[in-house]
Length: 421
Ligand SMILES: *Cc1c(COP(=O)(O)O)cnc(C)c1O
Image (cartoon, rainbow, N blue to C red):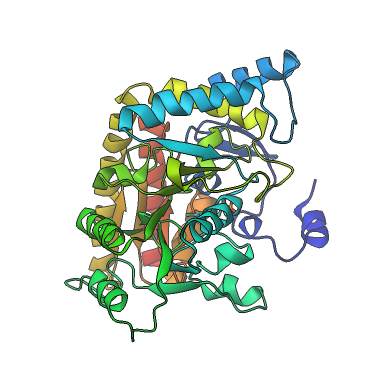
């Protein structure tokens, strides 16, 4: 196996294999190995798809048992035992204890499918077309979702104008001391603002691809009040920040708000299988049969592993506390690195919530210097943000203390090397 072969045959559109140009063949927990037997710690974890690590043994066993028992693999969106168990578990473990009463829609298997469904449902339910989205938001790359995605790289590649959404400044966009919702509130109340009355606001509580930008609790609560006052739906895109990443199962729990619609994907299967879910306030379920469909709605394998993951990790708050504790460890180390970099004359800062953390080194060039060195030393870590300027921690939530320390040591060494270069 040589990488030349793959380079030659795979479209230029490929991305992650450019940052990590080796052939991987095994993975367990927070670790992944290439075909030459080199071991790497994985701080990318499928961009937040492997919150419980690679090949989590109990989920793997549940899946193998299901396959061996002759369970349904594909059934369109027909009712299956796997779906029954999954819905029951979502209700018992996620919704009821949080006082949430949602219906569940299983769209196609990827995040952007859930986003499309949520946007259409919001338009359908309100009879309005416009969606408010925020600067630096990332919501996927199909046409409807793309219209709500900020990054021009993705928008330009579509070769069609993105329509149906208007951007507002996210929390912090205009620097400290400016509450960006002042503008949204003014625009909503002024008929000459140019803002069409929206069906919904659509946002991430912590922007993943956009640079680990964290919405403050107060900002989210004010946004909820604004939505209520103007009869606008609130949709939280929890595709990356959800499933425990920020230290609570749903990332909006920190702000004690109740979105009208939630999109979820990435880690919801728990095992890295393609799966997406939309949760909607019961009265918003205005869909008629088949108005939004797809061949792969509700992958039974994914529902089997999702059920096992929810039961194992979310039946009480032990896991949640553990994520928060590990988040503090990363925060402290990232803060140290930010000071170290700043001391060398390069501005840098740290931010995040739970185990969704970023080290902002202000330029993509600096971030690349560090992450390239990290990869050579055995750490897979990616960048995000408008210029790829933020070094992102998305390690598995189940990473051991030793692995976490080792990965952070590698990152520290890489920073020191980059500064010395
Ligand atoms: C990854 C992501 C998406 C898109 O999911 P895909 O599975 O790549 O289509 C949407 N929203 C957020 C917040 C994401 O992180």
